[in-house]
Image 1: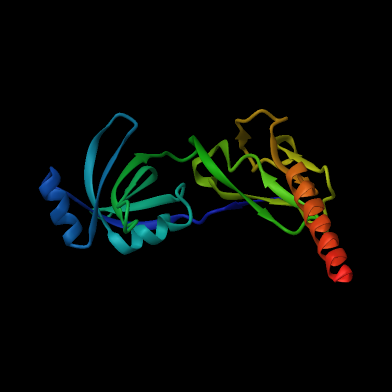
Image 2 (image 1 turned 180 degrees about the horizontal axis):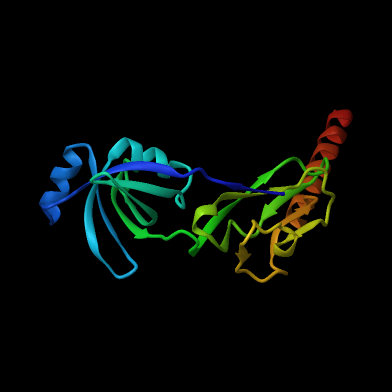
Length: 210
């Protein structure tokens, strides 16, 4: 099992002086994304981010640590809320929160299953995400859980997953994350198979009598 930590992403940002829906539409037409940066008692900053670079930075990791370059100064931030177009899935707006060096943050990290369990078995993911509290500079991109060779009845629990350095997993240690099992035919499946076999036998008998 492995925890993968994402790289820091750098984004250029400019300060917005116009606000409201009309201004946001104009910002998006300019191939920029409206954003707001807040936190640590600072006055909110209204920003515009490069559209394509922001999309790439958040594409595979909603918890990506971002270094914003604003008027030549760098500010570390984390995407708190990403609003997307429901059809095109493009980013419409981003809420960003300031993070400081050494500070810990609580985020949801996806569980990614790798490997193949024993032949004839299947796996079921009981927890799609884990809530973790980690240093802001070491946010995991995902948590890999290997099921390679696991037999029927194997259970991977939260307690089986290694913690990244300085991190805690804020979930009951006994909570099941992945369960490996052998598919078993239901009563309906068995009845259907028996009915099919009986029908085939009956058809064979009728054919021989003819």
